[in-house]
Image (tube, rainbow over all chains, first blue to last red; front, side, top):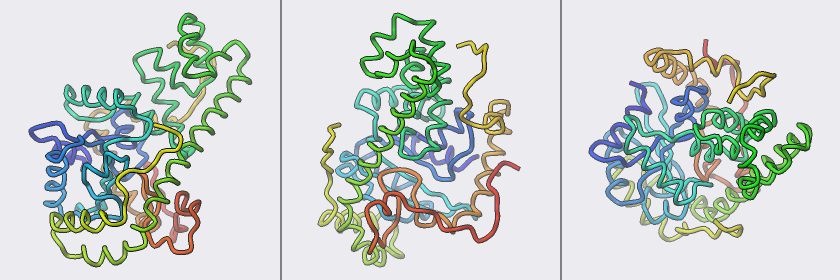
Length: 266
Length: 84
């Protein structure tokens, strides 16, 4: 079995604790192979994180630079990163509890769907939200994911194609006024494809810059942690993961803030 | 949604061809792709694909822009990670 599916199954033994996201979710949506690393959204509780650490400990995983896999940091939007070798394959496992752009009700929806799925992975809508990053290549996935969304309103909320939007607007004219309140470019559907494409580009650029600003806040907040990382890494070397984790928590507590102020609001 | 006219394309036909694979074929290609992609491990050893980090320390002398938008190491050989 594929390593990411295998890990998802192990993480969720007895209870759904982890939902496979982003690039590997795109494979499960049958879009493309795009990432060799796996990332999961985790339940924000100690049992879930302890179980995931235990699974990774059995695989000989080690911490990469990042936040400790601890509720207090994950609740602050931080991510944790571990790595191990599976034969000759480098397996990177990235974790967060509060992925960017997913509000509390979006996350609730992810968990609801995961509870009823044989494999817990994010649906097209949540995956698209996660893919709205500062990387150009991620936006290609948003465009394809929008076409997979079963709800035409969501297609209108997420589509990256001016042609698709014009067609959807013609099929559902009543929704345009309502949805343009949260996606202003929908008010331009009768202004021609060129105008709509310009607005799509502008919308993407704005979102990319917002993501850059978010990464910048976390980079600034982790400067002190980065400065002592080589020293911490030496201390972690050779430790079983449970002991390494305790050490991570203890060392990070002094220099890595658990919350990062979001100047632009949630 | 029906599409009578030309369609905007975001991913290649080769990428989207995953839709035509059986479950077993998808898993086999996925593993094969993953193994092939190991050829770039040296280039992205310090990089991150997800989360709030983009580059492993040391960050000494780097600007915030270089930390959040690092470049991968140049390839030492011309290896492909596309599906064969």
